[in-house]
Image (cartoon, rainbow over all chains, first blue to last red; front, top):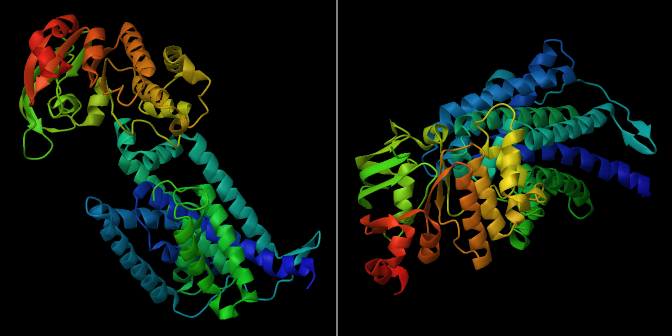
Length: 289
Length: 234
């Protein structure tokens, strides 16, 4: 196998998958850093986003035009879920919120299954041939996925670094007591966090769907790799989630050299165990663990 | 009339009272220090001003208004800022961002406020892009004070600002505290280093087992034999 083949058949799909994981892992890391719990409904929120986009595509929109609307819709869903379930438990031990999020995951999945059924779906049918860019083969959807992920990461980083409420989110993650003493409104930060997390969920679900197919278990199946990515990079760090996502994505694609393809999913699990054993704070020194 | 007046305050964090009647005043442009043996309720007395404990008796009047039982965020807006003893900076944020967070509730142009803070803490100007968590203990304490001062409070509460600092930094923190007072802010602070603190403050209160024991000017308390025997080490 030539180097270009290796690049095109393993690294490129790994980078595409990894950047989708990255978008999910950023959301997981934001919830953990600011709200201090593991959000198990993350994957199913992504599924919901993918299917909201599907509904819009069925109604006549192009997939990429449906994406921002789906992101906004799931942002609202995330805020409502927080108000209905998580907020209610906020004074209780965090493990209760974690368990509640598992329940929310099942509910969201059930809604998707009732409305859209359990059969696999796609945004568009037909085979798309990749275009060549300096020897690298990329389909349009892959190119757009990478561009969208880059835009999301840059936009979110700028928001967190430079905007007033982005700084408030970082302050709340860094030192919640001091943030409150400084007059940061905890409820507003929580709501904003859920809006961003919901939108990121929808984006990751949509990208999974457009690069493969949609089915009601799609989000649940990527929950583990997304958590692995967040922990690998260092929980609480956006740049860590991106790095972790790329590593997990590429590792999954490369695993077929040593493992049968159906064990791909075990790669993320192995990486997760490995990082927890050797470097539990993650590659970039996570903050909150 | 004094800027802050605590009268016979009783209360604690849970059901048990830690304060059994603490009274003190802080005047305009005054540095008042609370000293006392361990477990005397020094920090608790100060936190009661900031609404951090359940008050079951007495009252606290600030600037002519009864603030007993107010929530901390309301007290902040009324003009009292509090610097906790530990975890008092945003470690993962830069020095400048710490100051920005201090001014979170303030709208409008903050250029003058930043000039004032960097004027008080010239050492921090060169470090404004550094993460607060990477600074030395003394500089972190300055960041913590600067953050609290961004809201332009009338009264600043400092909980053991020199704990764990070298004598050089202790002197520096005391000097900065005087500078802050000279800029028009009253200061109430709790100190473990009783001798040094009493020597530099305007007035002091000695607490023991959650109640007032002695009070007076710093010099008078230093000269008081009973105070000396109690905890100044003779």
